[in-house]
Amino acid sequence: MRLLVTLVWTLSCVGVGIALSTVEVSGRTPWQHAQKLWKSDGEKRLGDAREQATGLVADVTKKVGSTVKDLNERPLDRHSPAERDALEKLISTRQRDGK
Image 1 (cartoon, rainbow, N blue to C red):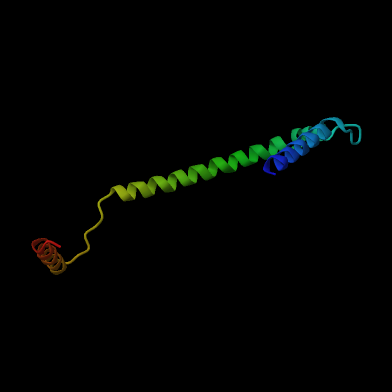
Image 2: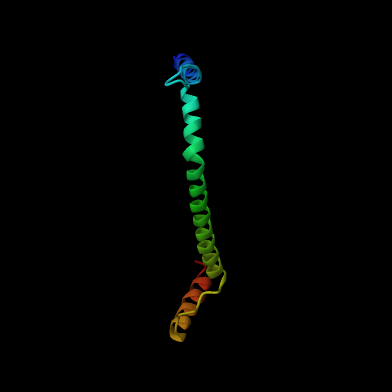
């Protein structure tokens, strides 16, 4: 059954491709219409999209670079001396008990 479905889809795609390349609509094939439309408007749109993508890549690179730089810096120690002593006491107790 799966083979039959694959063959039907393949034949349908080939048929559509043949129709696009041979059937004439308004004196040209649909493929020629698409090529004309692309040459008139598509290249300009592609250039605009390329500029937007370049700007987005630059923004993301800048943000990721600053984040990586922040991660490489040593974090500030915000514990008071009393809290540090309590943590050291807790850690040393756990190490002695073997937990």
